[in-house]
Image (tube, rainbow, N blue to C red; front, top):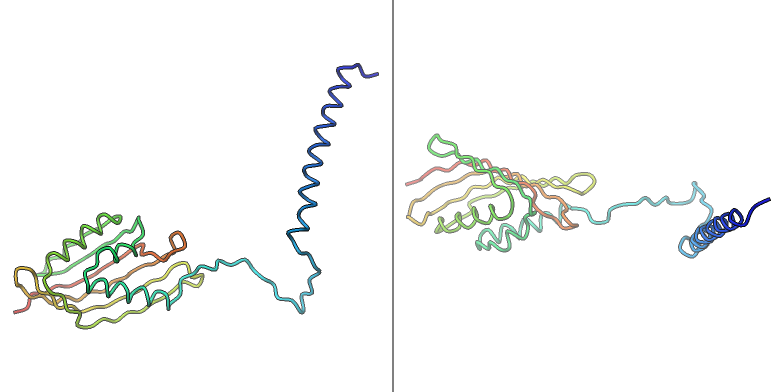
Amino acid sequence: MLNLIDYITVKKHHLINLFLSGLITTQIVAIPHVVNASSLDFNNSEILLSQNTNVLTKEQITEIMQTIEQAEKEENLTSLLNFLAPYILSNISIESDNKTVITSLQGKKEHEYYLNNSFQNVKEREYIDSYSTIRVTEDGQMALVTRIRATSLLSETGEKYLSMSTDKIRFALVDNQPKIINIDVKGWLEQVP
């Protein structure tokens, strides 16, 4: 025979179990209001898969690159920085007078400083020719733009230069927005008379 303390303990655990069962049951009962269940005929039905609806497209990257190139022409630093991921990494390799200068940039602040100096040191910039290819990954999460460009430059001190570069610009979705995460530039700079 159970004594009174054992009876209260069993009764208490029974009430807790009953309470938990009630919570579980109410959650299960609530599910049919949310889920519409029906039989599936594999021969005549479409099977929907979960997909990320926010993906990069070639058209979207083309439009972004047009905006970036316009911002470069206008030397619009704010617009250019808006396309950069906070953690962007870039490597810029410029060959001139049989010397190669390599610059590595990390983060938006270093890119802002570099672009600002570039804009201040160039008086005139004329894009002679530009050619780009765009490749988007199959899942639409990343894109690579390869841009080959010839540019005529006039420095603030009056020196003229011809520049050729191959830019590899990598885009990814960052907080569901297309952002540049990496830029690799291999360039050549020659002073012209």
